[in-house]
Amino acid sequence: MEISYWGGLDHVTDPRCSHGKRPRRLLCWDGKNTGRRYLGCPMEKKSQMCCFVKWMDEEWPPRFPGARRLLLLSGMW
Ligand SMILES: [Zn+2]
Image 1 (tube, helix red, strand yellow):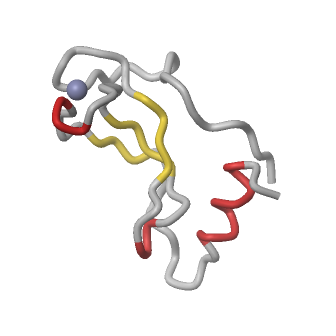
Image 2 (cartoon, protein in one colour; image 1 turned 120 degrees about the vertical axis):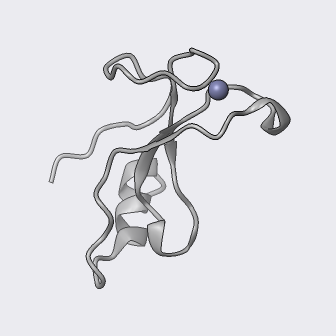
Image 3 (cartoon, helix red, strand yellow; image 1 turned 135 degrees about the vertical axis):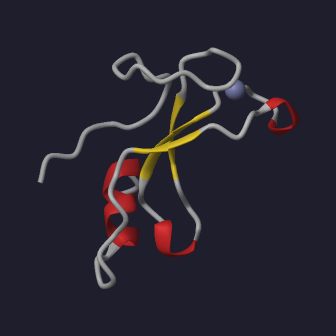
């Protein structure tokens, strides 16, 4: 499996957030979606962020170890 760095602003895809900005590459850390990559609003402050979300990974199959993949993606080991 090829693992590449995931982060920063996305310069590849077309979608823009509700501010018209290029989205930021983010990783979900929440529950069953842990480890899924998505694009979100690039604003620094949460209060300024719009609710733009575009998932880049399909939803995990029920038993897929998403948390393990998250470690790979984030370079924590
Ligand atoms: Zn936005």
